[in-house]
Image (cartoon, rainbow, N blue to C red; front, side, top):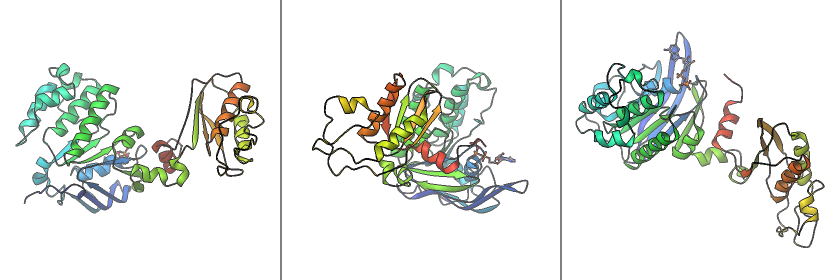
Length: 359
Ligand SMILES: Nc1ncnc2c1ncn2[C@@H]1O[C@H](COP(=O)(O)OP(=O)(O)OP(=O)(O)O)[C@@H](O)[C@H]1O
């Protein structure tokens, strides 16, 4: 039995109707997932959603109770011996021998492959040299993660499974990991990663699957997921303010609603301000706004202090809305540390899909 690498864009991992039960309880239920060669596929989901179970079925470490799993066209459990040289695996708990030194572990794993990557290069890329002589049990969490990643990549697998690859890593290591993942993709590798870091998924993933309660509740590219709520998602739709905690969000919400009740200012000297925006009504004339740029009358605004001193206003952001925000701050005698506008993020989409409650 031979394994031929799929062409870029062709499926390397195909999961159809996967079911996995523990003690009669289904933790994965009819889950479908495809990961393509030359692409990064991210699997997102709350704790306990079934991500690791799914990935472990793909790695041949768990036996499915239903459905089919194919990796490079083969059954990962039945064809494990054939597949092993072609698949790199980074487990969530590392799975590394605790008594051995880090450098020895990597060299040992490299020796199991016919054409391993250069161990010295990988050691340097992931900064392993500094702890190569330390035993695995004495490594910090981030060091252990880096070693586990090196072991997953050293065999040049055509499919690489990375379970929370940068969890616990410092920002420098995380960047090194992200660079490596991008290189793998460019080399035609199918990378499947689970992560709780939405910026990691947004930066790296070509395709995202959001898993909850054991099945996929949304899938697509990041722009597709962001656009799923309509065209507003791709334009500025929120203002984020960092200022002192405890400001009155009802006041801001009302001021923002007021901005949506009037048409946007036209070029012929129409009023550009709103009652609470002294800068706009008493200062120099605002830049003309095209007459067609009327705001949706009565459009909804949602304002919340999402964490102490961080305010998020979601709605149709335009210059008048921003003026209302600064007027609200001025009225409260509060100086903002930052004010940013932007669209929804992958984290917003994720929270909307999976809820804001702790599990
Ligand atoms: N060996 C096992 N025996 C019994 N239940 C298990 C076993 N492994 C996992 N589970 C349960 O299956 C469910 C899914 O677990 P899984 O590890 O796949 O979730 P996950 O999405 O990877 O979560 P996390 O983000 O926390 O890593 C959880 O409720 C977990 O408790």
